[in-house]
Image (cartoon, rainbow, N blue to C red):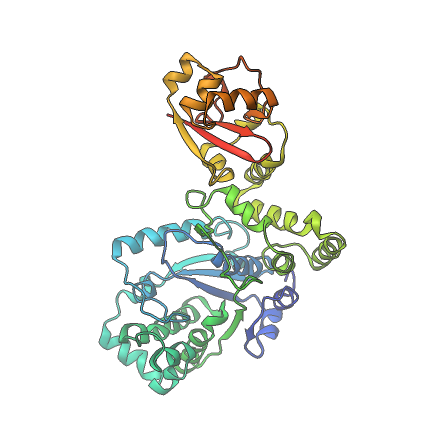
Length: 432
């Protein structure tokens, strides 16, 4: 084994519950372990990153990770942690979501190279659930678990005791479906371990119980704490929504900023959970950061490690450079043109905007009419002259003379011009 899998998770604070003898198992043989991913969207956000990183740890420790996409269970919806029934997805949406989830996971886990014994597998539980009839499932699987056992699970108990709108039979069967996944993987792939978030403990242990009752074998379980933010807000959520792992949903700049803006308390926890830095490196960073938190050493390293892992080195370097723009006194045209329109709009989110036509810029616009009539950045010609006299204006962070003619060569990222008065008064001119 490359390293002790359970001990590695333990020092990182990534173990919530663990079944007896799991650690001994992991240290005595190459173990196949699986994690399920619900295809509720056509991508994954950073709420799923812990599960992805766990699979990566499994593979790095010399074990075999199995990523299960819930094509069948996704049709039902997991009631764990929910107070109301999920909307059922159509087959078309489900297929699209499954393809998207598979695409994301494949960026992090090696399904092709390495030794066959620990080469990762990607499976879809629809493949073995689609041929089950209701009678077959009730007879072959349902008879092994009592209703009393299922009712004792926390996810069920909360819903039937009056929290929310109760629980439908559809959702009640979810833990049996998930439990049978474990049975199938145990029998077909010798998979002995299921890993998930702490809210999955009930579903996972139903699986270990089904394995015992249906095969006579022994299966194991491990859960991780649900990641939270120190201020009590939901991890991975911002004012504009989830932080996704695909750039068409969340730009690299916004992704970088999420980690860079972590509180000190969160950064101390997240550097261990979301990076592969070793224990000494993490502790040294935490100690160095504590000497002068204002330098944000921990947040910078966290943002670097996670952004490089998810989006690559070049994308990280661009995002880091973009994050410095607001504080830069001067930015060259070459630097500006490294960024695309979406990144610049993210950087200057909330800044007032106006539109100017490309045709007008090709003709050239004198600076005072540009500041007033064309954009309404300044309210009058006299205000514009006063600002020019004060030398407080800049275009794309560059000071200019009062005879300036604004032209297409002033356009950055092929689509905009940044106006500025003083240090913090910004205005975006979008070129149509």
